[in-house]
Length: 249
Image (cartoon, rainbow, N blue to C red):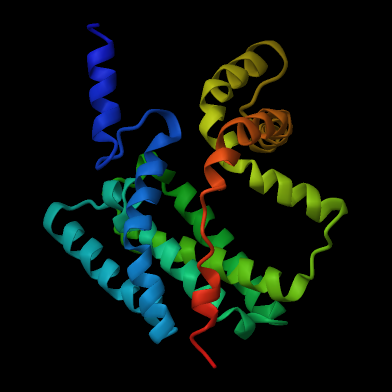
């Protein structure tokens, strides 16, 4: 009971704070977003640019926190104050996706720019080395903008087939959240085992190759988790994209 009580307290606090174990903290962020989603959908029905209007407010909040405390990493990474950028930009990208149809140069520029920014971020120390860096004011926006541009471009331009490699990538994406939540039980032990008994993981490219193999290994695990747990909850979903599309007549 001495260990159960703090655990249950952490679970209960997870309704508001990012305290759920392993990757569960992201469920809190997502739940907070779904609380404001009806307002965003209603606003988008009236004005398609509404989700983008939220972005300046988020940037102002993060700038204020950084100015006051010298760090905004926690809010940007662990809470809706950071991740709302990605949700809002995703909604906007869906509504405005036709603007990116055939814009190959725009998509390539977004991808290459993101790679360059992330390379600089990693060289600056990544998450562990940038606690007091102002990059965290804009990093959620940069991530959300890049992902939304690339997904909107892919959805309107790449014309993925329903079979072959596109199907495999789609299924991996479908199971990705199950993989994300469960990989904490495997990834650190697997890395230690490989590094000690197979080959050194000190080389970045070798580590990436093993990461890919580990991800492939996790796909069946994600499949089982998705069909045994997630799929039942997803049956309760209601479509809201039709409401967004009905903004323009």
